Length: 349
Image 1 (spheres, helix red, strand yellow):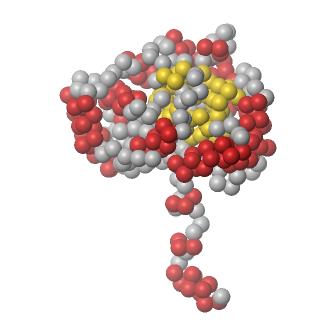
Image 2 (cartoon, helix red, strand yellow; image 1 turned 60 degrees about the horizontal axis):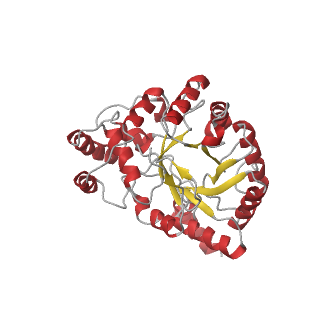
Image 3 (cartoon, helix red, strand yellow; image 1 turned 45 degrees about the vertical axis):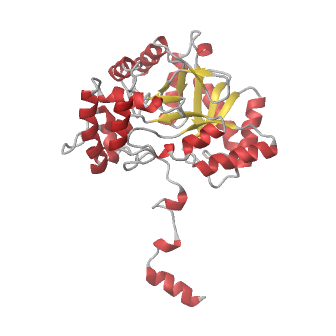
């Protein structure tokens, strides 16, 4: 395993990061089996684990904590996240000092450790001043509970704003960003990855298999039969994405590798990417991904990938991806109201 530096932190991490979202109720509810998967990944040289409090409402963190008992914690770069709801209380979420302080303490308890190496903001929180967030994170670092801080799914403008505020206020800087990236989702090549490189941030990309589409299991014209189809994975039947998959499958075959190996190798080939997060649910999934750990792609293969999905473009979007409020169809906006209603309001002014 060839290790890479996590941004400019000096921390060395494996090019594949073990994502723990599938450990727990929404994926693999068998704690013992999940622990065995984690141990096998660590034995194979992966030294980076990423989880979050929201994954099965803390169950994923508990499983990771079990796996790291017995002396394994010190050899692992451990990352977790906070921001998403952890209860019905409106203050059990977000990026306020009030919540982040409690959320981290809860995560540390579940993980069975006194610190995490990377504490990430799971999604942007437009209702909270980023200075409030950075101030709280700075204090958590000074308390020794956090070694570095990062973001996940932040737009480029938010990343730049946070860097400027950190510099002007003397606060801790975000050292990593965790965006989605795959052959089907290359939009971050346009702005996110260049911004990360400019500020010396590590990029931990998630869903290199495009939410399962780049496993080759989901084909055009076939009915999607998976428990994930009803859990924010409608993209598995997206015709545009399936059309691209149908072109990638023969490319992988001609290159002499499974589609999963082509996809994961592609994700870590970009010079701006530090690690690709793999999220196995079963031991078989892990075995397949580990078998492709040494895969490299020739320039010819990369050129053919570019011909299918152009650099800097997305073929559709993942249902689990962050949607900024300005373009969120669910967000209330004046122009989405009926024209008659807007006209009546204007006449009353």
